[in-house]
Length: 291
Image 1 (cartoon, rainbow, N blue to C red):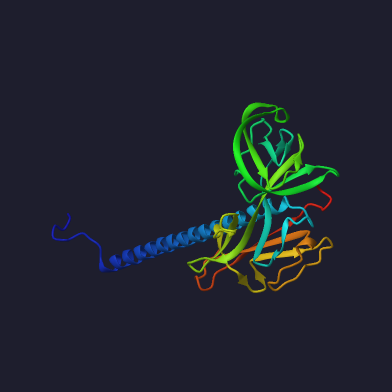
Image 2 (cartoon, rainbow, N blue to C red):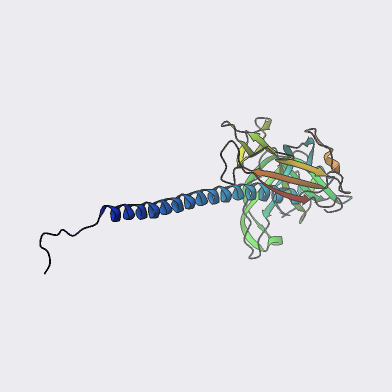
């Protein structure tokens, strides 16, 4: 028979063992959770740094690939290790009629015949067109720009949206002449108000007679880490580097531009000792013989 006076339960030793096992399990779970949080945070910083690198290299790569070496596309005296001023293509098309001192055009189309969107020309931009005698690329400053409705058989489209631009001289722009509109822009790595380094774009403002305040494109970046630094480097057609140390390089000799960006804090170190990722892109300008 069972002893009715005996109490069932755990002994002190059993309780101690259970508490020990529970603490081990809880400690392991907590450690795993903390590792997962650190990993997620590190991956988030890594993805952010990668995105900032792609944004900077992508924007600059597209701009520079459209430039022609030795043609003045790079502004003389304005190519340094932290800034680069160039002629950015705003729009392009074909002249839809003969004109003296003016041209009407529709924008270039995609494969389906739809017009490609882009910013409208404005006063202070420059019109480049191919023609004249001898036939060559010519440039004049734009003094007026308006939207008009006009047909253009060259674009195989009926009357529709087009642009009429007026230049500062009475030069003749022939029917079918290829043309494009460019605007001075300045890319620069600069220190923002919060102290971080950003890549910014400054566009020329005719009314102000200068460049607007920089609009941030990507960042933040680390400007220098060891022997590496964020910025631009320039090379001639033979691959020789043109200048170092901040001074402007001879823009007419630039055939290739290297853009380097140092992404901040990709690892698990503290903010005072970040891990830095280096990304770089070399862009060759079009040969000088290209139209």
